[in-house]
Amino acid sequence: MDCSCQDDDFYPICGSNKAIYHSPCFAECTASLRSGRMFTNCSCISDGRAEAGLCDERCSNLIPWSIFIFLHGIIGGLIIAPNIIAVIRSVDDRDKPAALGLNTCLGSGLAWGLSPILYGKVLDASCLIWQYPCSSSGACELYDFRSLRLSFHGTSIAMKFAALVCTICLVILTRNWHDWKYSKKPEPQRSYIVMTNASREQQNPVED
Image (cartoon, rainbow, N blue to C red; front, top):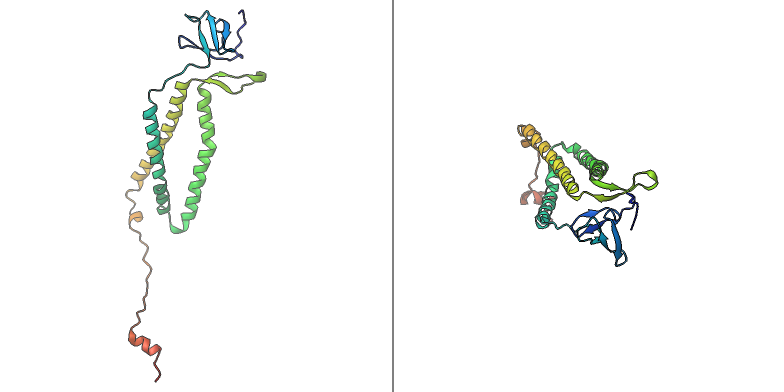
């Protein structure tokens, strides 16, 4: 068919050469079968055949990646309690509630405030084709999956590495602070009253 290919008409097809085309028009397909799910007579493809949709990409690293994510989740859960204990033991008794509250506030603010903005920029940077409804940028229609997974996981690893560096710096700076190891506060004096049988008989005399 003779058509004028438009960028806004996004209908991806996968050719038999494993190449993805923006639409049947870009592959110069002139016939369709199966209600538009298969296309033939495509001039840009050697055997002229294509199917609707993106080409399947097999992930050879799916099992190692799943094991890594599983271990990462377990380790991430195990460090929650030690972090809380470290915060509590780093301040005086009167400041412990404030320290826990401030730690939770900062963690929630950075996680729920900055993370959507940061990862939104990462997703937008990996977009190949945008929708433009009413001459304005809309949703992303196609991502560069390789760039997306590298940038997404790379950003997460970079933040984890920055947190590890900060933790190491704190350990180096505070390892000689003996006040944390040996408290100088005197232990409160406790007095105990030991009552013998004689003292009990004096307090409770037996009447004949």
